Length: 191
Image (cartoon, rainbow, N blue to C red; front, side, top):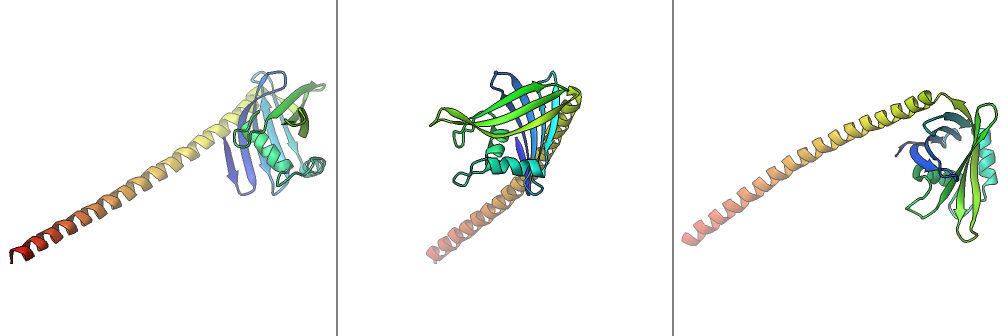
């Protein structure tokens, strides 16, 4: 699930790391300020971290530019689609390595099929936080998203009903016009 507000993209996705362990990632990528906020949990532990503007620029410089592809586009695909993107067929691998002092190294890589190797897209060091804090933030995000979708759906349903009403009125007007035309033609034939 993702939401875009101008240059700020928020993603929520389930991923498997290279050991097959399941994680849930909520990320916000702000291209305007060049920052990336990540919240990660395996439901036992939780981690949070931010890549600031300088760190993002360093990662973007390290990432080899491709045709119309950038650090941001790969990071957005990895964070929005998880391990496999159906749109372009790109595969992403995630590595979660626990470090000392309640930290975790989070790395996202792209599988390069031609070379049968992995290309590091980015990495971040996340700080451990109470899992209930991370889950609360994720649930708040999901509930806000559901409320927004519900409101949007209600507006769309109202608009569809309004358009159906206008269409029914137009069809009734056409039917009345056809009936009058047939009546006038019948009157003309009688004369």
